Length: 181
Image (cartoon, rainbow, N blue to C red; front, side, top):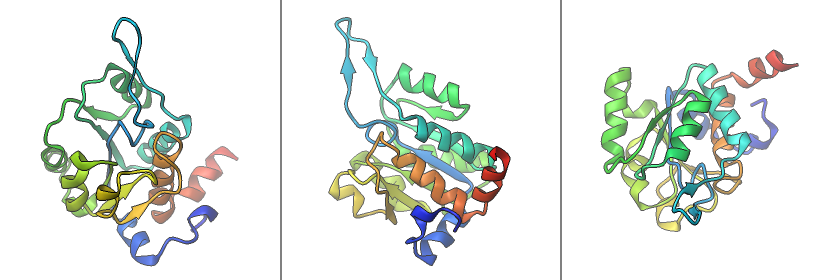
């Protein structure tokens, strides 16, 4: 793989990543560090890592559909998704059903889906998809049901590592680098 920090990835994981056509991400505790911050008026704010956002954009450019799936209603997450040009589904009570709906819409099967999550509400899709990923600081009960854990923590580049895995495994990393250099 052209990405040196992924050199320790085994062939089975690369094979799983090679077939992914839809990458789904939980928001809180995956794209953010999991903290909820409220101002005096009760408005919520979240911090998103710029590297994670760039990874999502690069996946889209490489032809991988990207969707954010969160149980919470979050204007901040909706805004971030709009900025990145990715799908977002908020207030989702059954994340696996949402993944299945996306698969039906896109003509994919679950084996072609990656899901990145960090806690118990993410277990159903993590157990069902072709590539289950967790940030390094995911809850232990959830992390043990994944194919891979990132080195980075949630909200601090973990999603970018997942994107880089997919891009590298699918042979897009070198093309992306050439487009910049």
